[in-house]
Every structure is written in structure tokens, then in C-alpha cells.
Image (cartoon, rainbow, N blue to C red; front, side, top):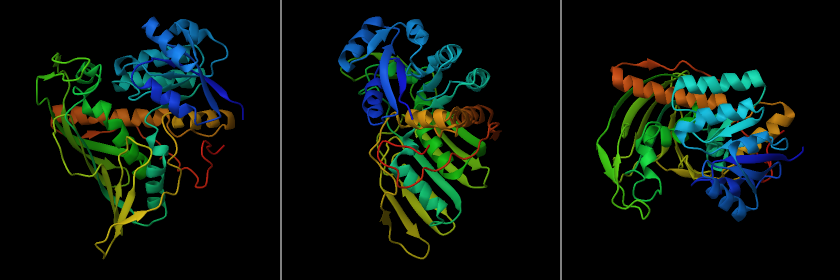
Length: 365
């Protein structure tokens, strides 16, 4: 298969991780970048051996196959639509959009243009969550009946150079970190049918303590603690919490409980993470060796999409998966506001598991 060339739109905090991650895959190569801050794009290009462009000029390049959208969440949908209108495949950082209508518009536009939409997170392609999927698919813990998913911290204002965006529309713990946890759960247990949620803004403003923003007051527009239950189409029920209001806790990131045993899963924000299981009738947790490579990083979803574009198979970190995660998040917020269960309108086929035994840097054709 030929190497597909990538362009980046957005050269902020996450962009270096894509540079490092994409270098692991021979099927993709980043060659160009653009940013609304032209000087930042030029500096990034010089550092990483790329060419710097305006957004319009990057989209006009005939040799760019896939454009990776690394803009801020509130711009994701608009920029993705620009990329699609230019006739190029798009891979977006999460979330796909900040509301259902915009997310659905991106998917529909791509279908009309006959291009692919991919979207982060792609951490479920790593050895940690692929091993967890194999445990379930092999029946080791039996049919999943319950799960917990917990992200609890005290916000990014202590370290992030642009922490204010996390407290504005499109931010918050649910839209920022929720996609990792929800995508992992859908990967492991299939689509969600309905939700019930509770949410609040615990502090009306935050005080930044990072070097870049020390002492700045950050207004809060979004819920900072969201707790909910997810009812899966399979009948399983998960409890999920995302919070920027917690100073510390001892809860595991994800646990899956099946008819024959339970499984503890590592942090879904990473590609690795140990997997432990306990079988019914025992009390001893046992670590399961990884069945898939953990030697991958950001860009795995783009690489999988590059294989899929050329072979015609579905790609795993898909727009449909991202739209479903977005639908779940919007439904949780609506449930909290309305005080009632909310149906998740979208559905999809559970993403296929990766075959075991793939070489590092390769996906199945």
C-alpha cells in the first residue's frame, strides 16, 4: 500500500504528539501544517521539517490525502466541513463537534463527498484496550452485565497553557475526557441505548496556577461534575463519572463486570495499561499479558484509516463512533437538565477488534 500524505490544521498543545505517533507508521507521513496563528505554524514547521501554509493553501494542495484537524473543540465541525469541501479525508481531534446537529452535518457531508471521517480518541487501538476486548470476546469473564468508568481530577488550570477553553462551551470534563471513557466502553460493550445523568457547576470560576496563566480568573460556563448511568443495547448498565472538581481518589478508571468474572482496565487516555481479571469463586486478581502491541501512540487511528481507505474496509476510529460518543454526552447533559432518562438516538456496529499478532506499525488491510 502507498504512503498517504497528511497535513495538520492546528499546531497547538496536542500537535507534537501526532508528530511522534505518526512517525511509527510507514503508511502515513505528515508533510505540511497550517494554523490561524501563522507564525506559530511557521515555527512548528521549521521544528519538524514540514511546510507551513495558510489553511486555504494547505487544503488546495493536491498531494495531501488526509487532513488532521487539531483545532479547538468549538471549531472542529466548521474546520472538518472545510476539509471535506476540499475533497479530502478528515481525521479530527475529539470531540467530533460540540452538538449533535453539527456532528451529523460533518458525517452527512463526508458521505456526499465520498471521503472518510475519522476521529480521536484512538487509544482503544492500543494493547491495553485491545487485550481487554479479547478477554471479553474470548468469554473469559462471561457476558458483560455492568461497568464503571471514572475520570476525576481538579481541572487543567494548574498546568495547561490555555486552560480557559476547558471551562467554556465545548469544554468541561465530559466533552474533554469523556470521549476516552465512552469510546472505550462502546469498543468493549457495544452501543448505548439511553442514559440518565446529574450535573453541576461546582465553582463559578477557576484561578489558574500554571506558569503561563498564573493568577488569571477563568470563568466557568460548563458543568464540571457529571455523573450518569448508561444502558447499553445489550442490557448491560454502566456508571460513569467525569469531574474537574475532585482533589484525589482511589477508584479504577474502568472496570467491566461479567457473568463469570470481573476485569480492571487501565487508563483509556493511554495506549497501554495493565489488564487484571478475577474469576467467579476466587478473590485473587490476576494480570493478563497483553495480546496486542502497546508500542503505538497518537496517529494510530489515522494509520488504521489509511489502510481502510486503500482496502475498502471500515476504519475503527470512525466518524460514526465519534458521533455516537457525542450523542451519549449530549444525552447526559440533557438528562441532567430535564431530570429524566434520555434516549441515545444514534447507534452503530461495534468496532471490530484488531487481529492479534500484527507487527508494530501495521494494521490489517
